[in-house]
Length: 280
Ligand SMILES: [Fe+2]
Image (cartoon, rainbow, N blue to C red; front, side):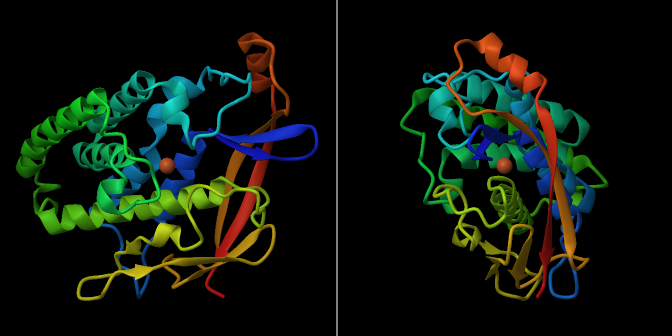
């Protein structure tokens, strides 16, 4: 979950599953005269929409950190323990791949990227391959993707979308969608400046695919106020693009017990955050 300050007494929590829905919404509206629509479209939107929903295994009953506070998603691998984190990502990937092998393939790449500095794209993130269980997870996912690829190559729907260059383009799109989804969801209001970690306004400098024959380009978020940001160049099919997601308000304190926190978490007041992305 993303943990944001709200006021003197409360924290705003945004679940990874809600961040994932926002990410899917961005993917669904990606594409215009300048930017190619993701291809295969539905599978890429589904991958974006579900890319972190493995977290639901944990978010249905979140564990407090050692200080008795709800933990922010950044640094969570260390706090939750690798075994817990790897298990819920594994579950999320297989659940998705059972529905759609292409989406599952892309999310498997994404999960590996979270452990390997974005497969080279995200140098700001810590790498985790010093841990044997991470190396084992990476091997396991490589082998899982090989099995998925065999199915994709047999699929009339997907067999024309599995060339290496297209998979690499779609992996980069997945990471751009996620960076945007994090940038939008991990601050409140939009112009809050407290967060020093996570994606930068240039989405960590990852160049986004544009269209065939065009150079990838870095997108920049210019936040104008508490609700609006200009995105340059503008990749979406409607302008402005409204973005909304739900968050929970809980008391900002150290909790004495897991049960005390869960009472606040389950019964938390919900707040709907509404932002807009614009071309100018
Ligand atoms: Fe994410």
